[in-house]
Length: 291
Image (tube, rainbow, N blue to C red; front, side, top):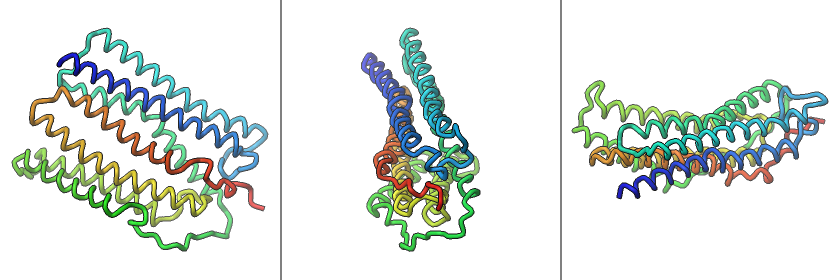
């Protein structure tokens, strides 16, 4: 049995390294490269605010490489850590190894977080440079359940209630100030309030990207709503499973659970985005110079 646990541990860790530092980064790199080569700044200047001039195309083509090299460095570091763990005879014993998995996962997703931040800044520059007086509005009414199945949303809501009930049960319904139950419940509520604000902002607020075609914007809204709801479902399952492991003194399985949880989040987030928004189907004519 111990050998099986060790095999599962290293198998899950290898999967995390491969999935988050190679597979999806490579997919994103190919996507970025396709955009910079097919839609260069010289022809699609609105896509690259603040980037112009004779060498703009070459500068744009170098950006995907930077993203790729950073992920390659993290991949090599992950394999190096894995090799040292195996050489040292490391064995998960429930002494906080999940913290190591969590911290390494944060390092793995750091390039993606930075890329999202850079994209947000890019949209800000787009809005600043968008001096056209003419605006094109999407007059089609938008309702929340246009973007997610009521059945899936109901599942997320039921699981959320189940999480609250489970937390209260294992903590003897202690909701005094500073209690574990109150802190856990308030944290979960805070995360879901953030999800709700983000969804409301994207679905009912102004365009973040002022040039995006209405068709592509609705697809993006659908993807974001699905990711938020699916993430809520995954979070609820993770919390209940993690607490069950603690209740039955199976802490040595927490590193597996943490790694699998992060991988599922990446599959839900990046995987859903890549599957739902193939770059070849997006309308890039909106980023050409206005005549």
